[in-house]
Length: 263
Ligand code: ADE
Image (cartoon, rainbow, N blue to C red; front, side):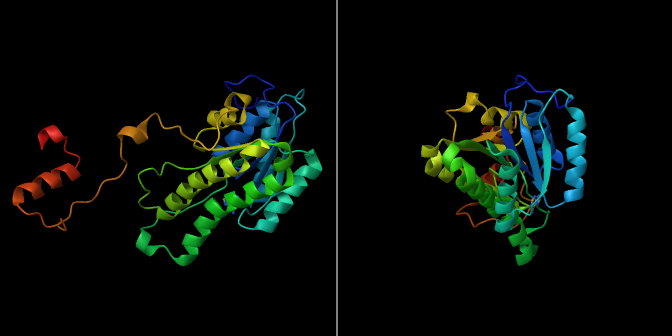
């Protein structure tokens, strides 16, 4: 059986979705849920062997009565010509593209001062530029004429992303790109939103239940970003000069998250 879904079977009957980075992890989970809801799914990434394995695995999850198909297409989203070719092949096979889920991405942990130009560019090109190429290609080749829905998978970077500044910057840029494209493409019936992350929210945003939602970023984090900061600043002695010692002490406690009542 495909992944269980809170949405009704057949919600996306005969629709076609492209899921980048669909070979593993959340991309695979999204592909599985879409498939279970009646959607044909193209999974695209750089590693064709793994994609094919995933496609075979996903097919075994759907009942033989389910006519949907999964197609694995090799595509490096950093290369615009490969993205255009992947979109063209999808149209040749399925004759339509209703949904694009930009999930392909990658990063590596590193202190910012040690990120090389090559590493920085690779992360920005995959997470930001690749997302842009995919949006642009599906829009020009199909959605401009027929409408559609796009969901970008981003990350919890609302308070910065120390240790992975490249991906934080790129994902924040995708959040902004989402808003720009939502406005530019609204008149063609294309909606575009972002999610950080989880697959039922993606299905909701693709569905008619979200037909009035565009340019939005949905945080699926149980409210954590409202009350919790994952980051702490290590203890140090480089505090700014304060006019008197009292103020400096209070400031230090405040920065250490001491509640105002205990200052
Ligand atoms: N997933 C991670 N990196 C990717 C890339 N460059 N192209 C497609 N999918 C990816």
